[in-house]
Image (cartoon, rainbow, N blue to C red; front, side):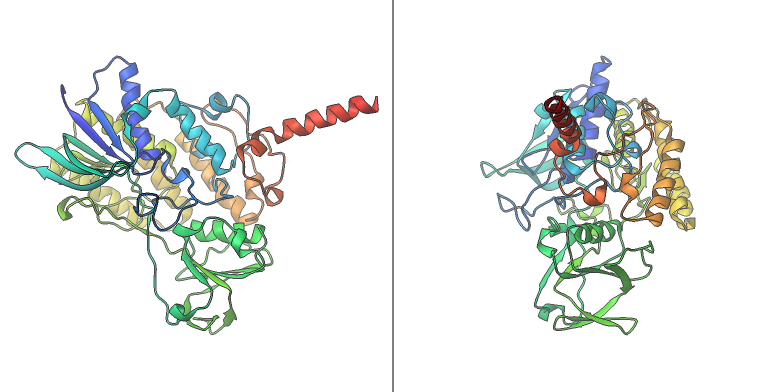
Length: 463
């Protein structure tokens, strides 16, 4: 393994998981390859690194992030907890099960700040192109240092693509939308609900982003929210002010006409129509071509590109599990790159991929999807020394979460769950989610303390 070099594209949760995996091996006294991570943003965190920018960034590159203000976790934090770094360890006290983005970002950073991995990341650096030399078995990567406008190249033995798949929007066209007088954006460019106060808002889509953006805009004062679905509605019990209708057919000015024959006037449109897996830096023969699903084809163990296993993809699945799944993938990938895990021949890998694809095709319900991804993570955990966690209990929590959303889409974030890592029961947040309009870390973590101190002061004054 001497002089082996590993390139990681992206310092979001998947890329950071890969860096953390190598750090864990180093702490065990193992020899690890040289690792370099390329991140086109100026900070780590990927999607969790909020930016007000849309369109292009400071250096003219397409904005990567789709993060927005007022985003709170839409799943229990207990379902994504790192098994080697608990929420208890980070915050030193119990917190609620559905924290806002700044709190989760702080947690992500907490684990990675315990090591020196920032030294391995080249920020403001974008990958322009990758070639693979069959003779030398090395990747040649063309890079741009955006800050000093310098182009250069380097060679690596392994390439880890951890650039995510929620950056390149699917933007459909509907007849007449080019004449719509209001704002039309994709969820990628949504930065918060404030602009939609007192407006009639149309959201195209029935994904988690449609659900979350719709509920957030309702919470922050939209006059009405209408969700237009293509095939199946989200189907929860919507409150007054939110409704679902079949797919949009066309616009006539500011009036939308739907497939069920109904029509309505709108002030703004948000397309929550999904994203494309896009890797413009890879040649055709190395590019993962897939739609968003639980098991992309051509990836052995959902990680290794079957035609070229030295090419590794992390986090390319549709996701119930997130941070801990990225960890499980990264630990297996690390062991392969360190010659601690041997993968079978190409034909055997293909058979294993097919097995998962066949199972994936049988899935019908959300519970089926959860069980499938649970089994996938168990498969990964059996292949490395990533600290085990009770995946079956996490699956139960995911199913409870789905039921909670069906019961009340506005209050499910007020529920609490128990950590499978520490056994700690989450605290009930000091403010019900629908009444909490401040998503800052300070308000979330310290408001209750501030209120207690004020009450103590008032009590002393009364005495």
